Image (cartoon, rainbow, N blue to C red):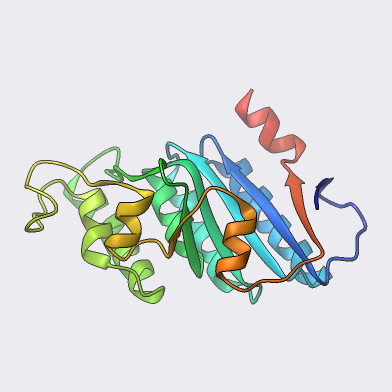
Length: 209
């Protein structure tokens, strides 16, 4: 069963899985929405959160705060890239305990703007530490951000890595390539009475307008 709620709706969440959208530009409104949603679902005792991601990136500092919110929660977390996770979206994606990508989705191209040595070094460190914390292939993740990294048989120097769902599984970035919630929940043995889609709040919608 699939339903939708707005943030702040009174519900009994104990055995429900919540789908939280992270769509469009990653900015302050996105960070605020994700942080507040996680806090509310923690209070209510949600069984799991699926972050449904489709973004070409945004502000690195806001992505880092979203990463911190995801890592800090005790609720089981799954990132589901249903289309694209580029740039800052890579960090948000690998912050979850589990990563799923639609088979034709793409993940990568995480080069910084501005691409100065100082900013890139910091960004690589954040990506590397997060990947290692979650048991991901940190070499591949760093190569998504730095075109000067060469990985034999995978990436030549001068290009950024972009992976499809199946490639992300092959190279240790994703756990599963799947296109629907049921396949995701079945794979991770998560039983639920209902899958609930959380609606983006007013601030996020205004920021996108």
